[in-house]
Image (cartoon, rainbow, N blue to C red; front, side, top):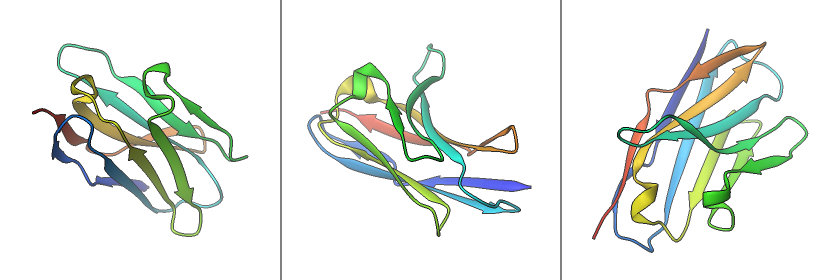
Length: 115
C-alpha cells in the first residue's frame, strides 16, 4: 500500500511564492511518475505538473514559467515550487503517485491566494 502526504500549503498574497512537498511511503520501489493536480471550487481536477521516470516534466499552460516540479528519488518526494502566484491558483492541490498502474492520491492541501 502506498501512502501519499502533501504539505506546505497556506494563504499567501498575489505575487508570492510557495513550495508544496509530497512524500510517498509504503511498499513503493523504483522511480515513479509523480504529479500535482489541483481542483478549484466548482471546477474539475486538473493536471498542474508531472515528472516522469526519465526526468521529463510536463506543465499546464497556465503555470508554465511560474511553477517548477522536482523530485528527490531517494526520499521518494516531489516538490512544486510556485512563484508569481495568482488569485486563480487558489485550489486544493493533490499529489499523485502512479505505481504499478495504480493512482495513489494524497488527501489534498489548500492553497489560497488572496490580498
